[in-house]
Image 1 (cartoon, rainbow, N blue to C red):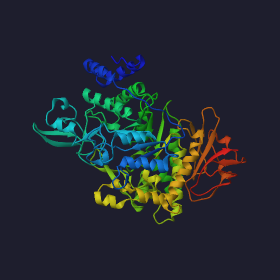
Image 2 (cartoon, rainbow, N blue to C red; image 1 turned 90 degrees about the horizontal axis):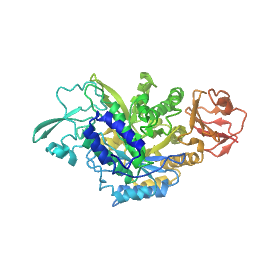
Image 3 (cartoon, rainbow, N blue to C red; image 1 turned 120 degrees about the horizontal axis):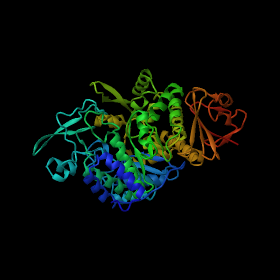
Image 4 (tube, rainbow, N blue to C red; image 1 turned 180 degrees about the vertical axis):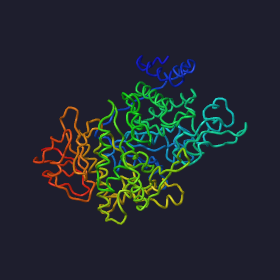
Length: 573
């Protein structure tokens, strides 16, 4: 029995185990016996919380380890504006810039060690990646599997010739099945992402236990948030798409219940780059799965709005995320280490709109990655480009480009949920075309490693692009931290108005504070009185045109216009 768990949690876990392992009592009893020994702790989120997404080696300096440089950078520039860091996989790896993990329990020695993680943990909250769908072909686990070690005999998924795999969802154009030589002959293995990333067998009880042990270990080592990478692919069943399988959801519910009990305060976030309805299913029916899910439609829809000067499409989507199950919220971002997803925009943008956006990204110096469809054809999967380059034409004046970029982030910080800013967005980075050319990896265009000393000089220069972007985003973050109505759990109402403007009302549950968030996605100067007179929808009556308003971003009262590509956070004074 799981004696250290409450009766309620024991019941929750047992329900999910019975479903996952189909009432195999011996397996369930084994898991219950071993689960009880694992433990840890953490906290919740507020309007003062903002994540920075970064690699452990995004910054470089001769003789310095990456995690130590991150700690120095945090102390010098980020302490007042960033509460948490999502450090992308910092374990030993063999490919995919960290997402082909060789050892879940060690730190890549090129980045530092667990003491460096502890030093960062003492400065800010941390998000760890749990890359559990697959593991490196160079890992000890996989080598022992190939060599016939009985302990690892079911750790990976051996594909049978009679399996029906035609419906399996493919995020890449690479083969689903890869062959490996072993002492016992050729073995055909499931490889969702690449030949170096071998899918683990979540249906094996020993693997399932190891996964649970890893999550609790991460919490004990300082993870405030655990990100379940590529979790939608976890459970494999021939004859299905193998995406969003009911047993994948059951496993997440099991882990959520386990962490709630043994590591209270540890937050779970799922990474599922799929259409909106499937994505939000990971919040569960009653908030019993993830605490947060990524808002993957936000990056492409915000980009479309700034490209076209029209907020119509993004407002339709925003109206579907005004709320979430109790105790859950959204993880909002515009850019990350990956590209800007195309698939999450499907259903909100039509084919002509998607094509126009892709063509513009290519003109701005970006590249397109593709996925394979069940019929063998290929479709655009993501746009590889920095978000700064994506939103504006390189030929435009720099200050105009910065204004568009800041406007996009004003929207990011206005939407219900927790905001996360990628390091190359915070730093206003341009495309790293040489990084792509040298590696042949399209995603490297947005993964440049920056010289620490040069970066500091550029950030300290008020006339430099990096300095301007950093100051603009810092001002937004400071303003947000003082607005309780922008709490990740507070209500959001999307108001209808001029098609060039996104209007969101944010309200504390007790109504003690409300803010009207406005973002002009066009190049036009718009009368505030006319804009407010045209507001429609629930809550519009709270913002009459005749009042005097205070803007929390600029710190000014008596606002009469919303300028081109400007954001306002208004309250009545």
